[in-house]
Structure formats: C-alpha cells, structure tokens
Amino acid sequence: MSEFSKELLVTDEFCQSQDIDVFAKHVPMDWVTEAVQQTGRASLRTRRFPAEQAVWLVLGIGLMRNRSIQQVCDTLSLAFPDAKGELPPLATSSIIKAKEKLGSEPMRYLFKTAAAQWETQCEFDEIAGLKLLSVDGTYFKTHNTEENHHFGFAQSTASFPSVLAVTLMSTRSHLLSDAALGPVTHSEIHYAQQLVGSAPEHSLTLFDRGFMSAELLISWQGSGANTHWLTPIKSKTRYQIIESFSEYDHLVEMPVSPQAKQQAPYLGESWQARLILIPSPKGDIKGFITSCLCPNTYPVNDLLKVYWQRWEIERG
Image (cartoon, rainbow, N blue to C red; front, side, top):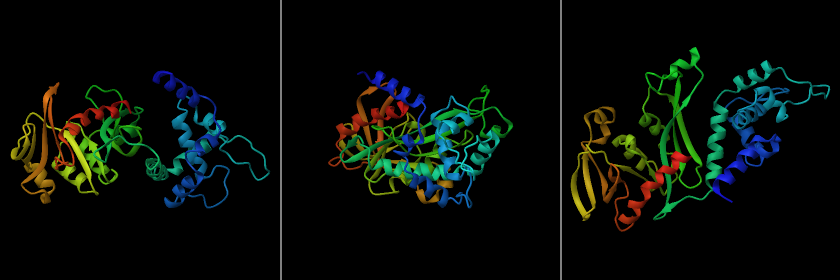
C-alpha cells in the first residue's frame, strides 16, 4: 500500500462518526481531569456539561472541523443526563458558554502532558546518540473580526489577521513536543525562545537560517544535558577560525551583535561554534554551525547529512 493510500485511509477514519472512547484510547480521562483541576477549571457542582466534557468538545472541534459545535457535541455524546435521567439536547449557547468558560489553560496543560507521555513512546531519528528534532514557524489565518486584529497581518496586502506559530517537532514521528504562538508582530525567534527547555536531553534540534541568534542558540544549548542545535550560516555571517579539524571542519568564534548584547549582557563579546562547510553546496546553503563541537563524538560526515532532515517539519 502506498503512503498516499495510507493517508487516505487515516483521513477517512477521522471523517467517520466516532465515539468518545476512540479519543480516550490516546488521551486517558485521568489526563483531562488533571488538566482541569490543576488549572482551576474543575466544575464545583454537578453539571450537564462539566469542564471535563468541554475539553473533549475542543478536541472534537479540532478533529471534526467540517461540523458545527452542536453536531460535535451530539456526535460525541458529551452532555450528561439531567436530574430526571433524561437526555434533552443542550442549547448551542450553553455549549459555547461552557467552551469559553474553559479557557485555554486546561488545553495547554493537556497538550504538555500528552506530548511528554507520547514522547516516551515514539521513535526518533538519531545521530551519534542524539534524538533529531526541528523548529520552524508557520502562519494560520483567523477570522477577520475586530477582536482578532491585534494578531496583525502577515503581509501588508493580507485580508485576514494571522497567528504565528513556532513548533518543536520530531523529524521521524512528526510529534509536536511544544509550540508557542501569538501575534505576527513578533518574530519567529521571539516564539522560539519560549521553547527553550522543551527539547529532550541528548538531542539535536535543527533550525533554519531565520533563527540565527546567539541568545537563542546559547540558551538552547544550556537548557539541558546535550541539548544541541544546528543551523545554516548566512552569507554575511562573520567568524574567525580558532582551530581546524579538516579542510571543511572548523571551530570558529563569532562576534555578538550590539543589539544582542544590549538585550542579553551576559552573552559577552563573542561566542563559539563548530563550522562545517559543504564540499559540494546544495543551492545557497554553503555550510552549518552547530554546538556539536567534538569531531570524534560527532563525525563531520554525519552532520553534513543531517540538516536535510529539517524538511520533515515542512511536511509535518
């Protein structure tokens, strides 16, 4: 069976009417209960539509985007019986009110819990004992309403406000370990800094050139044991070779920009990284810098191959 056929089958499966138990196989009720309790959203008295059910509603809306909020609620049988044991339909206004009262914090808590649990179960691509992940940003259009205008517009000609999301993803499983999102008026680096500390220990995170920032990359490296990074160099990158391991493999020192020093004085005047030049460049990418400094532990040929797996996040 081709990969495309498999994707069609998966898509068809999600388009069918599903019982809530299908979701519960992957999202245990204990996680949901913990999410609403830890964020102070647990219902204090018995309701027909308590906070725990509102969580399932939000999950259902995400998986059944072509259906109304009322249809999602009915399909998943989310409303509890009333005091008489009967099950009259809930008004759409009551469902929407319950969802709005829930807020975003329980969903954020559940996302973090699920990501941490699923991460222990999934397989990672690896290089020299390091799990491979990637960071990238993407835009999501929102409804063109007055309250959404604070998100900003991705382009001056854009007709809809947009949200910028930066995610940390496994290159093999496409599992999102973490995400940060908000107005497009902030940069991708701004949101990537919110992901510092989210990469697992003994990992290598791949960034594109838009994330070249001494503050971000130094913080990323210092957030855990062997939390390494790798990113292409820009054509205007200035560096001085400190030590050469081979013709294409060097330890370099780079100046910290005045802007970076002003925002983060602890960075000092310069920072070091390993520079790996590509013998036969592909396109306009001439080489990479990385925190994997030891050539014996992290062979140059392995690092030359690894960056191209960054494109998995584009598929994800």
